[in-house]
Amino acid sequence: MNGMKTIAIATIVSFIAQGCAAQGCAPPETTLDRAITQTRDAVRLGQTQDFLTLIGPDGLTIGSEGGALSQTDLATELNNRQGLYCDLFSCNGRKGRLNSLMTSGNASKVISKARNGDVFAVVTLHRGHATDETELHYAYVDCRWQLLAIGTL
Image 1: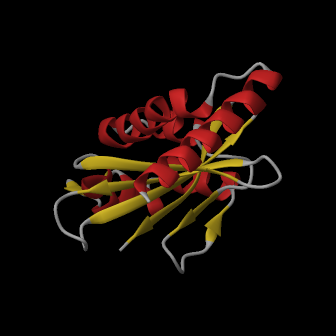
Image 2 (image 1 turned 45 degrees about the horizontal axis):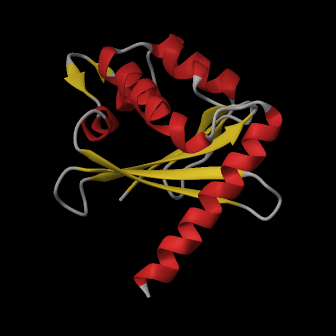
């Protein structure tokens, strides 16, 4: 059974690489680690503008039941140091909850390709306990990974 999974994963990665090569993009699996590092570094270092460059044009969804923030609303919250800013970075000298979850722990990644050719990734940041995890959802669009959502358990 494991052999079948390996073949299926290799086939998916091969299709992803072929589609990206046709567009002149680097294969997404080679650039996902860089996107994860950029996301984590922006949060860890408090670089709101760097964080905003990772967000796609449709904005960012927070939590499994959270609403989506448009790019404009997200930029306003981050620039005014309110709302999501306090969760991602720090307010009143205290690190936000998402800051702690996103800046430490190990990352596991799954890259998926939809039938229409869209490429997505789910990155789970683990800190040793199931209730201490964060998921980062990305889409590979125009040769770059865009952060779509941040979810917590």
